[in-house]
Length: 441
Image 1 (cartoon, helix red, strand yellow):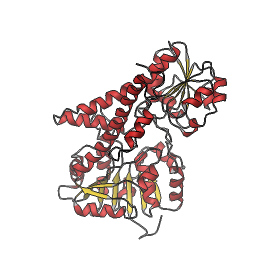
Image 2 (tube, one colour):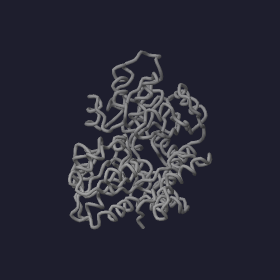
Image 3 (cartoon, one colour):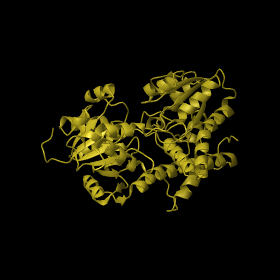
Image 4 (cartoon, helix red, strand yellow):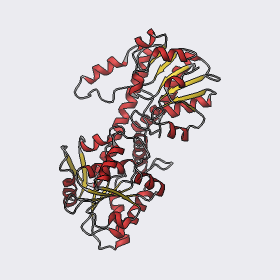
């Protein structure tokens, strides 16, 4: 371990995606970090230098900080929490069937660590939680330690972007801290080396900022996909529409790419949570319900484009390039590519898949598909190729080689990564999303 005085003593409870990134980055910033994880198999992998997901640069950072003595992992709550000045709660909050956040993991974690908290410690909620969760956590702590026990409590939502999590942690757009001023100021000190504005507020507002941020981004994606459908129908290229919209500083050009829909662990879960929160408090979240409906329909729209090219898919072989919900991650949760594959399989198609990172996790949720080691083998004998994820390597496909492998030269570019003219010059019948080419209604 690093010597005393070499940085703050931090505990991170829950070493999933958010917890591992936070632990590694805080260690990189010179703190002494102990990660607490109860999953024995997971912990064994971590100690062996393996992490259960793909995130560029993270495995190397963890190895470096572990070797430097600034980062260790434990399943002992006493070792993880006792003596720590700051305890980050980073456990999962999956959704219930009604859309509400399931707080059972964070409640269990608080009850496990409460007996080892120091009276001058600050507990920081990093997990995505509904408003009023902070007081619920305070009540759990006092239930273990007694009504007179006092501990700092701060809400510090995460805004990590999968595929660039280290960058988004160390160079964020903002840092949001909610709670009493003394505790918030102490946690702000942990971020002193990061050049980003810090918004100090209360617990409820901090929690809502997280949900609202993801909801507006999800809304933007669904809006863009709706506009792309209309552009397809009237013969307009949405790329130029997006360029014109993005020149307005009130709009900007970010999140302006149409595709098969949003996925992952955050946007679908958090939008559903806001809708459920509205039900709980008597507010009908009409717009967000439609955002979810638009997104749910988008894989079917890609399927309709495919049908317009190949006709009946029963008995056809369809190659899907990409299965993760976005590039630079192996996360297939709520992936529109998985939804498209399920539609195809249900309609009697044989589905072949290539993804540079997501094969193992894909096979767990989509065992009926056949997985290939490269895009050309996946396309071998295919009646159509569908690009589902914007992996950089798909921009550089050898289209002549791809053409040699397919049975029929049908190319559905659901991420608009290729140049339509180039694809056509290589003999493909190309269809993108929102490019005004061969509209599907």
